[in-house]
Image (cartoon, rainbow, N blue to C red; front, side, top):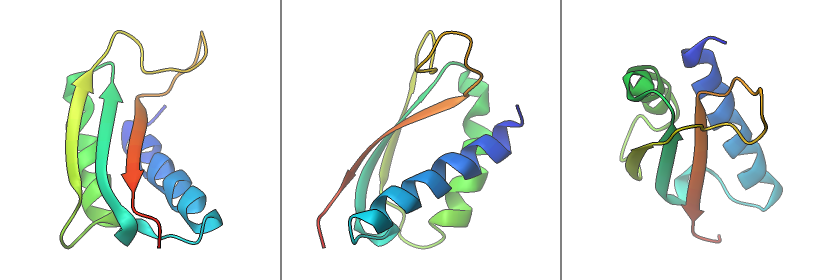
Length: 86
């Protein structure tokens, strides 16, 4: 349930999906971050800077009623990512 660790895991998952398609985080051009508690932006930003320390892609944060894909989920974040194909 740790928001910082969830943010790191979300970004690790993104890395894995990109890698499977032959891309890397450098191919990401825009991320829409959905979160149910806008106060959790701080933790996400900390993880974001770990994964994108230089020239990060565009990012927007959107507050939503429930960022979880399934009822009863405990996710703090959901990502919508645009990446250019390598």
